[in-house]
Image 1: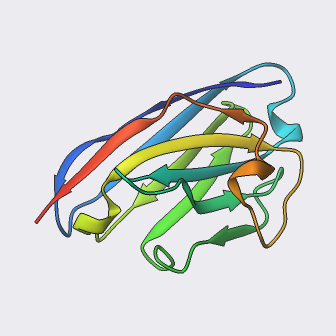
Image 2 (image 1 turned 90 degrees about the horizontal axis):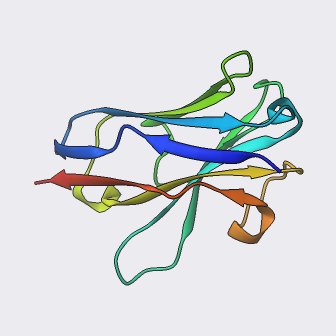
Length: 124
């Protein structure tokens, strides 16, 4: 399996931007579809975005569509989440995760490997 480490979280004002990064270790990074999920206090973990092995296709939760962009660099074994126009309701711990499948319904149990998470806090 692949090991994942997120970075880039922090405190930002509403309307601001952040870029999250997820560095992977292991030789098979390009075999995995990658995703970002998040969990706010008192809420269940929810899907945010996912990208295919090649980066040729992406899907997003409706709540972030048009504001967030997922991308990956297989040579660097890194996946990114560019977040623009942030809102207080985007506040959560953001997790990077790897999956062997890519579907229109990337539920949390679709993913095999998880990072430790990075906190994103958006102030109003």
